[in-house]
Image 1 (cartoon, rainbow, N blue to C red):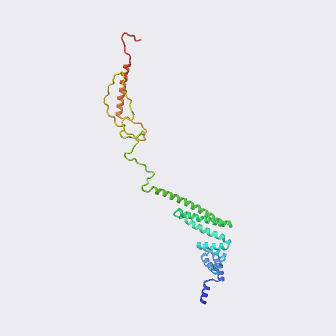
Image 2 (cartoon, rainbow, N blue to C red):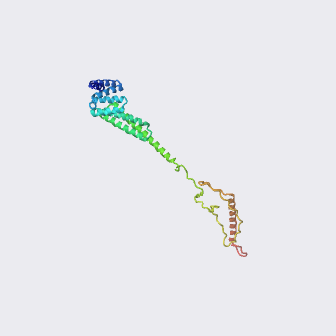
Length: 290
C-alpha cells in the first residue's frame, strides 16, 4: 500500500510542483519554446485536477498548443478558458478564427466547387470571430487578421466561380459528344429523291415541261388573209443549262435558242408585209384619186 501511494505521488504533481511547472512553462512560452512550455503547462494542469484548472493556466495552454501546431487542442483549451472566465473570450475568438482561416486557405486546391464552398464557409466563421474580437478591443493585429480573412474569402469566391464555369463548359461539351446526338454545326443533308426548289422558287415536279420557261407569243394570220405557209419542222430545243441556286447573273441563250428566235422574227416580218399589202386600197382606172 505504501508503494502505491509513493507511485501516485511521483505520477500526479503536487500543487507546489504544479505552481513551479506553471511558472517555468510561462517562461519557456515567452522564450519561444512552445513544445517544452506545453509539456510543463500540462503538468501544472494535472496538479489541479479536472475541475479546478484556473482560466489563466487554460489560456496559456491554448497559446502554447497553438504555437506548437496542435490546433484542435488549442481550440479546446480556449473554449474552456472562455467558459471559466468571460474575459478570455477574445483569446478564444482569435484562436478559433485563426484555425478556421488556416483550414479555409487549404481549400484553394480543392478539385471541385463543393470543396471551395466549404472553404468559403470556414473563412466566414473566421471573419465573424475576428469581428467579435475587434468589437471587444480594437488593435492593429486583429484588424490585420480580419483584412487577411476578407481577402481570402474574395479569392475563394473567384476560384469557385471559375471552377463552376469550367464545369458548365465541360458539361455542355459532354452533351455535344454523346453518341446519337446531332451536333449543332452539322448541316442537314438532302436525301436522294427529296423535293428540290429551282432558282425561281418553284418545286421541281417530275414530268413538268422545263424546255422553255418563257412562253413565246403565237402569231396568227388575220381572218381575211390567206393562211400563212406552215414553217418547216424546227429542231428539238436543246435543254437549258441548269443554274445554281442563289446565282444572280442572267442566263445566256444557247445557239439553238438564238436561231429559233431569228426564225420567228423573220416570219413575223413577212406576215406584217403581207398584212400591209392586203390593207392598201386597190386602184380603179377612170376614177380620180383626189
